Length: 307
Length: 287
Image 1 (cartoon, rainbow over the protein chains, first blue to last red):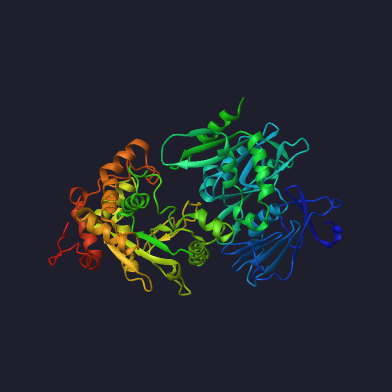
Image 2: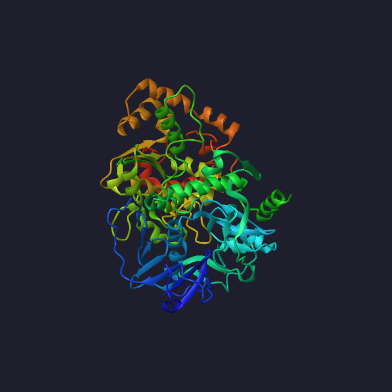
């Protein structure tokens, strides 16, 4: 769907898409004015439930082409056909709250609807290719990618990694937007002062760290995938994953896999995950849970990435 | 819909031991079950199942916003369960500002509440925390504001859990309105295993098969789980602790707890200790 750029005051760019938004999204790059619109974000009425959803969670309903997200005290988001997000904000909501769930779960749903492979992961640039760090919330994806950033590697995306097949069928990781989100303890480990950084929400001690010139704005072929993990032992472990285990890891680290049941996008999703598993090495990288030992962890990953 | 059987306890009170027994009972195999694949996982406060059920990140929510949704998450889990979920929980049985219970009765089949002499809990808890600072643990057990994962400086793997004081934790579960609760003393699991585990099995509505219960007791014996931990490690051990299955005795506090710490525990918890037979009529510890 293409709309005239004049319909939206804020033309943005993220995940390779031109996004025209009624709510300014200062975290995102600006889009060139003459590019066609891929996604519109607008304010409007949003129902409380979807009729007859195929899948429902505590605060979402999912049907083919439609996903409804309800964030108490913030907003309801209706994401449709991979090209439109309608937001009905709650009276007391602040823009900053609306953006957090828009740029996370709502975008995740939108990208799923577009049949993209959406991994729960961060990605960095390594010699012209992308390296993806997947794993559950809190395992250290953003911390690891920021540690690589400090060692001179640009960051493609934080938390939500979109993968699409390129023209030669090689799977590409797409840039998200130039921001990482980090907790206070991670900022401290990485020698960033939280003082000048804004909170992601007023009452949450997680900070937005702008990537600035360290953002990699081009899609890159994926060199390697890592599943980050921690354990109660003292050693680092790097285990190369093979066969069906790789596919299962990609499935388990799909962003909001629960959305897919309603989107009816599982077939396409599995094909892409299979394709990625076939052409890309994947290792499980385990670090001691106690005292992150970030430098040693990153050194072990670097040694693994070097030829 | 399959309502949840809660395996509730203050930390270090026999919950994992019971889960080992229950796993062996349910599997009913010829070999002891693997301690790294126990029933009752993940714990109710796990972050990932919460995020999956809700549809957005708990890491971007306040503790209050998370707690507000937890009753619905448990109801959702029960509604979508195909087999009876057995769910470990360390949260106290608390109520939200709007009056709803954190653990809703509608999602609950029953609760087994494991309780252990607080003098032994203090010692075991201190070893589990790997710092052996008994005084600190004694203070935590007396503090009604005590919680797990209550920091906002990082994203912990688990959600914040209000534990309350040791006494109020026990009281919150045992006197929880609207749910069936069976209190189970750790000491009775040691002294009268067949009777105690059998009562738990019957309470949870599982087949009352004394041979199967006896076998599960044997397969979850302390020596057996210690050997398994030595061989393969145990994923639930805290990173700094030497082992998870350390001693498993009743009354071991007498070897390591200072008199002033024991006195504080008795002072803080005498009411609940009397109620569960941990103090005699002269206020002397029974175990």
